[in-house]
Length: 239
Image 1 (cartoon, rainbow, N blue to C red):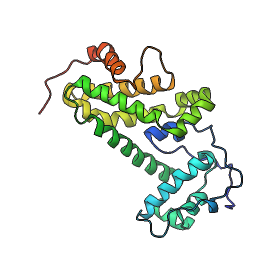
Image 2: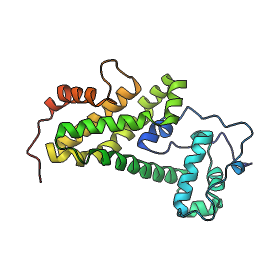
Image 3: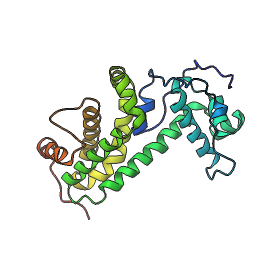
């Protein structure tokens, strides 16, 4: 059993999708399973093809899922990764702050890579925006950990999101989505539209509406056509 302090408060971590599950839900701790210890959950084997840094990031993710971010320590992550604390600090000299930031960036890139695969075939701005909101909503709805947290303490999740982590989601989403939209309306307005879309997706995900369902292409298309496109006239697309 790790001798580290379970009450140590860690800085929030992880992704756009997982930012909702982990980074943004700081006060909501996943209770540690009875009778479990780090030694009972083996990390990657010596045969693992992952680099040392990737092993640490995967170990951090597993520890957050098992105990909740606020209870995870550097010692836990090192044990889960099968390395010493000193080795972990050589890979991430800033400790958990640097490690969690690296994990957030990596998982954000994965989220948007998956999203981009669903929008590459879009042949109009409307088609692009509909594909974006539908796929982003699908990914959020299929996050099992997030669904459990929302079902158990929805009010606390929403409050934490409002006051802590939403700016991180909006900034990250804007950075990734702006280039996809810019060819239709120009970069400056594309950033504005990308932020608007991210706010809409999160809002309708956290507080579902009986009138709008971004998970349904027809409903998403109607909303985009009636309420978004009129404010963002299309330029002639660049080749």
